[in-house]
Image (tube, rainbow, N blue to C red; front, top):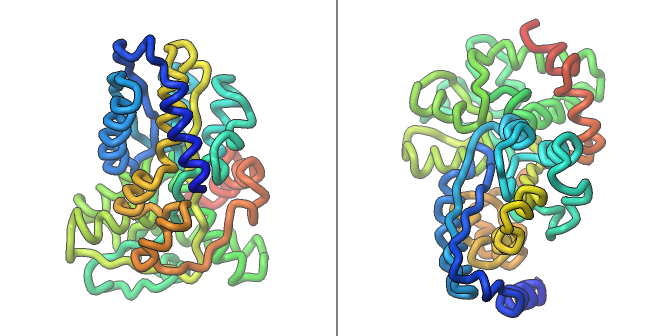
Length: 332
């Protein structure tokens, strides 16, 4: 990994577009909901680093929303130069339907193009008045659960699959019992926001619900910074390794002449500086040295992976496409 950073640094200096250095450029990062704070700070660091290396001024514009909704916006014409979304399936859709980047995009950066990871936890109100400890507690009467809509939110799909993994283990793979469990859980959901940040606002600011199923980083931001002392984080017995990927939207970046900047922007996510910043905002670094430095911040969690669901293509088809398991259980 150290060699990767050294080569990256050399490449940026040697290959810098000196002739264009005086010409400012703007790139658009289309991202999912809970990355706002991280990229606000990351962009400043990248802009300064790129200016120092090349002399070129860069402006980075952000767009945030539910991951699935953001992917559709890019396909429909939102001119993203890079996408930093909640799950690989959403970028696959941009490649397959939008034809805006190659299908092998995930092999172009380390760790399957996921510079950081996360997982799914519960955020409850101080004192945990409903005594929520695990997924089974979310199906009980009198418990209001806040989670976004899996049709529009990548985070919601991670939430759903984590709950499904728990039910699968509990019921030995009996799908009728699993669907019954999931149906009970979603009967307790009073509102489906379009994205993870919307659900956090519903729970934290509007005061609706007893438990928020959330990205780990989103839960920690709420518990330790946004509303310190008002909430507690509960780690379920089973969760899922969430791997939010990044990619250059090559057709858009080429059209703008921004490929060099877009490539450097995503590569910078793997530098020690950016990895430490990710940890600051409660994302789990993929750099082993940085991860070890922040190990006390992140509890060990028993996780499944998307591979346990046959990959995102299979998971999407079975669970989230029209007529899938979510449609079958929701509202029953």
